[in-house]
Length: 210
Image (spheres, helix red, strand yellow):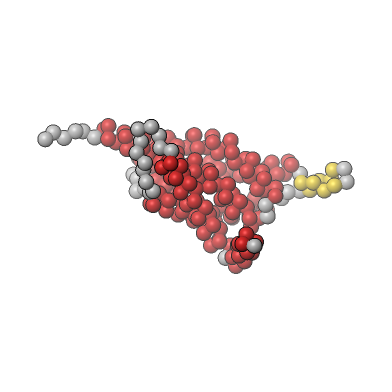
């Protein structure tokens, strides 16, 4: 089966080149999330908006972000695995994972990595969009709060499943696959900020007389 061959190919690539494999996987799925976002924006544009078409540069920015961030997340997952091992407890004669240990791992991920990851996202997108430090700060002010609140509504449950059931080599691919929909949200939020920024810039530009 094609899916089984794909899993075996991933296993071989991960064991041979773990960081490269995570980088390419994360970059590809990050780009896919933006493609899905752009398709939705083109199929269902808002009222009085033109269909924007496909922004290749925007997709490449998401690819580059996933390419760079996924190996970092891989190291972070390895740290969590070592620092917060999932202890087993006996319950009615059966071995079960300690929910307390699992909750500690999820809490560490969401309290420490989630806020830092969003800072890196906003900053790296601003740099790739060639924005000034002042513009990046403004973008951070506009985006960070809503994105972090949305993150805490979605990702704790995703990571609970991820940390509980996924072996370490598959956690980043699982996270990246779920992240397709998260990147859809971030991509739309990022594009919404761009629209707001352009509107403000135009409103502040003085009109030149003939």
